[in-house]
Length: 512
Image (cartoon, rainbow, N blue to C red; front, side, top):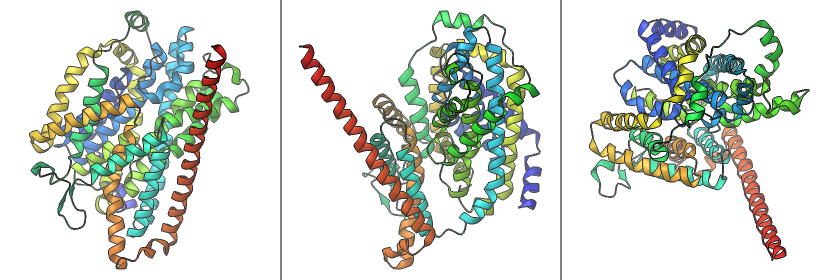
């Protein structure tokens, strides 16, 4: 491991890698600061343009976008009370009240410091635990991998934001789309509907671009920020102060606690930044001696969610790089970049591409340092980005989507896939179906099928092979437990909804 780390350090120590990290963090922060745009959209669009880069440069560029976008989303939340992404919604609860009091610079400084702290904490934890976990995971046989991936799919659907039933349906759709194409064992085409282009399956990158890029363009159209808010945002001279020892002393417990929460949440597949931010905010309020000031411009109300949602960034790569299971939407998109560059995320990744992986991990730490510097010196530019009308951005995004989808295989059919995925994504957004279960299930689905069928081949068709392995049996028990709890929550939700409907009917009768 030590030798691979040194090789990775030498592999990373090229000026091109630093340049691409710098570009990634800069682009990500700009995009994150624009309400409505997201890091997932940007990463999905730009993956095809990294095809001719080295694997290290390509991945660290995309990771830089990921990190920058999560921090950038807090800028618009604090300055104009519009969250750049859902993960910064908790930040605006106290960030915008501070801006209205004339303390925008203080709020931005707190968000910036917390973001860098949480991200760095998570990355260090990831680097420490990654290799040992991979060493254990590589010993997993097909039964263990089947049990782990099945458990991951269950958790993804269970923790989906919004309606849990819709989360399950979204995951099922992802599994269904994943089986189109060649059989994972025999190689024969399935569900190709006599369409030659579908014999190889649905191309992942064009589908990603459609789900996140085209659907976003269709969903938002020409929305712009109101002129009054824009004028307010433009009229101040923003700056971010360097963190002081007094600030760390005052907020260190909140920073550490929230970073731990974000790291734990990030390791769980499919959860994401939003849940981590609200969990950390709730915990900070619970631990505070003055919980009544939360929501009125409390500093801890900014520190907690920003440390937590940024701590998800590094932790989400732990299940991806060790088991091949993405931790959130963006890490699932970046998994596509790994595959594009000939690296298969999973237990054998460190064996086959150890130095490259360590170079990427080092790049993630360097990205945090660059984010710290860029946030300090370019905050005025990032704050002005909230003024950019989306009617100017979306035609550019649409063009990049088409070019990116076509450039993967130089195939016009991929553009049709992109458009179809865009319409599907628009429908899912408008009807409350989460995209994360679909994307992650599309990636993990073939792993589940492959592991199950390999296990049955090993046992000669004997299903008891899944219940004679302690690790597999343990994950099956966890899956059953999660499924039972999910079923109870669904029944409870239905009962509450029915009681609420009955109450409204009774009230209407009384009013009449």
